[in-house]
Length: 212
Image 1: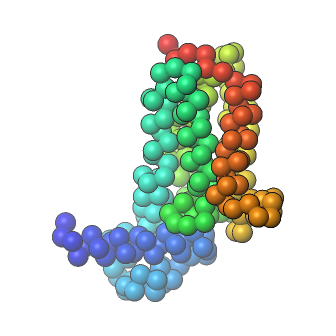
Image 2: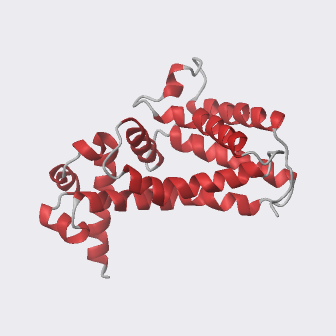
């Protein structure tokens, strides 16, 4: 594939990511994306065939850059210290995405928030291909710290931890801005949130060993 083709595809993909993140799948139009990318509609159809396929390509690229690195964390666990480190890394990365102010994490946060609040026609497809694999990895990591083999307890833990992070993605201005004390920087606030969430985890969970 020649560099001009890659450049055109990437230009369309970058423009589409921003437009979808700002307007959502339903309200975004191919013409809006073309105007942003400074290309004609025929090129979008040539490279991606349809708005739906372009949206899938956007989600796939964002997942590759932001979601996929999380999935390697369970494999880094060898003992109690590395389990805590992996949990901290998961929470930190989740907060970076959900409370982001700059792309590409900002686009991920907005798309995630829009899919939660106003599901698109492709929500189920996104759930199966991207959300579920990440969630399974998180459950695998959590299972190393839960004593009882109880799927409900595991699900409650996953829900509680992710909810504390995801809520920051659900408003355009950022939920964190409503609570961050005056004089505290965004970065310092996110770091304190990470510490607060992790302290709550480690007070009630401890490494139980690697799964058999």
